[in-house]
Length: 447
Image 1 (cartoon, one colour):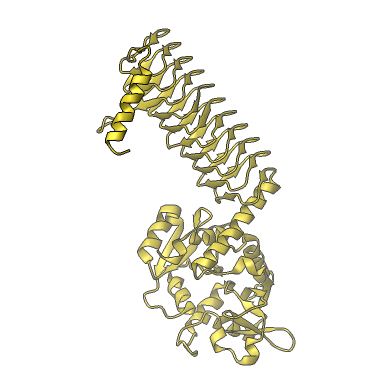
Image 2 (cartoon, rainbow, N blue to C red):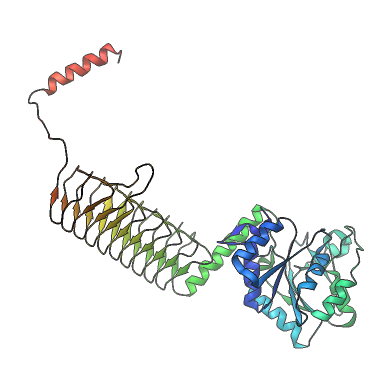
């Protein structure tokens, strides 16, 4: 999988970079692709459409060469360019906007982000003269021992005036150990005729990702950033909860420890998502409660409803207001009306359960015949006794009762009682004889 397509807090790495550039004010975005170009291009087209274009760097001849490939795709009317790496998802739009502003104040040819690291190994060092003016950047592998001691580094993010950038890229030469065209060489060129303005940023927001350890660290940082944002907006997010980027949390909602909220999940005001719940693309209305360790996918949960503990809400469910799904209940493509309840150990597949209906423990909707799925309809205020099987397609009418242990194969009329069970027979005094019989059988078998 190409590096920039790895997931980080619900988005691909490259998506974070593009969204940061857009938020900072970039109007036209070009992505230079090489390794895995088909997969990267397909993803960008699917997510961003025509608003993001790609160009191919056929030969990997350095960062300067990569930017050079993009120049023919940039509009002639563009006045300045923001240059970013595709593997830096933690960059902050405010820093990028500040960088663009710093360049534009005096219409300088170049502005760059910098940061200071305790351990700068691997980064290009920022070179300054005795007066503090930026004079260039030296890549780590090309540094002298004295230069390698410099702690101010170049993360590689710039805003350049287009006329300067075109000329500087054309003048690049592979005068380095790798024989590549370094984008960093444009810094020295700009310094020959003008000041190069720098904007200092937090090191953590500028870090690139080169392995899965760094990916995990970056994702932890992003989850913390997302959680803090919702805390400041008035929600309670406990430590250890993990919220994807596109999740929305209402005021006074509570998200407990070890909760995972994915995709486009929406949590309404005052709702509570208890420990260990996992939700993906779920709408949870105001005041609803999800008790511990419930798993819900692509469904809606109504106002004041209660789910769990240990419920499994599969795709296509609509859990109505004040409805209950309880311990070890699984539902799929099923609608529960207001106040309907299935509190224990049930499978509800392809069903419609009316307002105020009750489904007893151990009930199963037999919805699949091996070839097709069929629906079960339980009308309002019907009562389904424990350990019943409803063989779809079947309808239980309004106010009807299904007796415990019944297998329902025909529609039940409104207000009727359905009973379908084997008649019980008691054999008085037979238990001792049965025990002796069973003991003898066990002895014969060597038990």
